[in-house]
Length: 37
Image 1 (cartoon, rainbow, N blue to C red):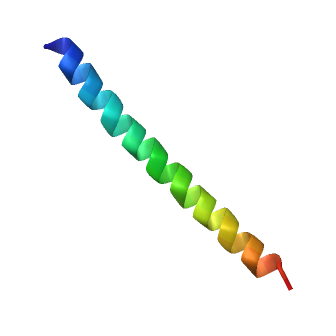
Image 2 (cartoon, helix red, strand yellow):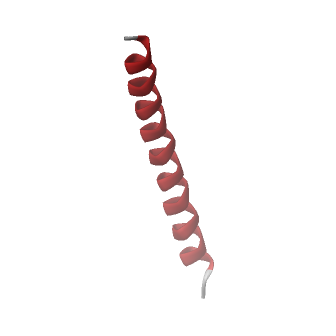
């Protein structure tokens, strides 16, 4: 039972991590577009 809870928590944590990474990548790409002439 504890293993299932751990897996669910890990999956939710990874979802948050991926969301943050995607947001950071989008911000970096937008920043590069703004810098380009």
